[in-house]
Image (cartoon, rainbow, N blue to C red):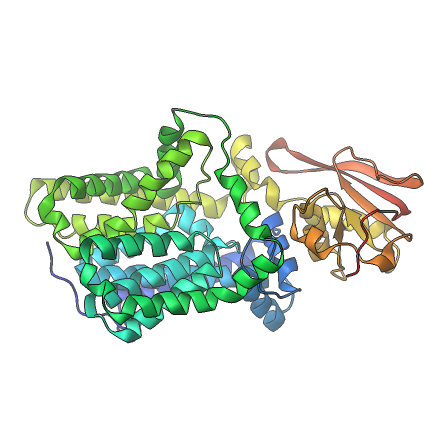
Length: 491
């Protein structure tokens, strides 16, 4: 295989073909999120509402997504563009780390093709445009992959410190970052045990824990609500022997079938070939990709695994596939593998091109495909109807966090909107509660579906539906009545 490349600096990257490619991607994505007036998805609006109330933690997630949105919207004002801007920069940072890691391990040729694949894989494209917890997770995960390799290769405290910082920030983004620490630790244990006896890994562990500690304190203070929310992802639904097959087919669909298939082939060959397992760079990427994927398979037997859950595992897998395939020399197999890789890139490009066109021309796509956009439509229209009936300063209560967050964003004065209490907290709105000063006052009830306000005196103002792409509709009603709620709390 090809020898490892010298360290690639950011200035070297900037003045290169690959750097120009990254700048083009950045410019295109910035233009796209400004040109396409795609309404915020409920999760994006929900995280934006978090950003107005900065804290060390929230009901279901750590605080990083809210911090990033807050930084953007307070600098640029409240808009869909400002909410999504951090996703674009996180996505570009992710591409830079993919390139730097692969360049460091395998040289420029492999790094170039890994970069092209990372920029074109459909699910990575989606999370380079929409602001959820996944764009910053990909950025911190890929940065941790890069500095983790540098730390193991050079055993310098500076790199261990940077690894700890990226792991800590990753833990402040999504609990999935724990998987990075677990599998990185396993790799050290099996392949680089001598490093465990050095101070570097313990520095990383200390820094990561110190950065995560305030969020852990917040979680403990709130009765471990975040961990209890996460538990439901691991609860059994119905045993399905075809679950692993469905899981792999979905991964192939969102990642590009040929690219994912090549990763699986390389991972299998590493299992078979002892000489490949003698290569630290291959085992490093293998341990941070194939091993986590294998750990998900038992879960896929018991419940559906969302396509984005194992997404970070493919970052190392992408580098592994490109590194091996473009390092093989002078063999018919190498030419076949490269041909399959190019085919995978073409399919990924076509999938991404369709993704870019879907929100611009949903009417040109088949109804089931257009229907995938239903979460991004109708909220501005719902807010316009609510604003028509709302009196100045009148409080609003809804029965779903989707409505609460979208109305807070799309109503002109961005009011605080409240969610009806539940027997146990089901969203951040329940943790915030309903302040005592609106209890007993008249206000608007904006309710999803065919629900009636749970109060004796009420007046129906509106009942209707908003048409959405793909033949879907959004049903809601608006009522005026007194807020007589048992669990009004001090704000």
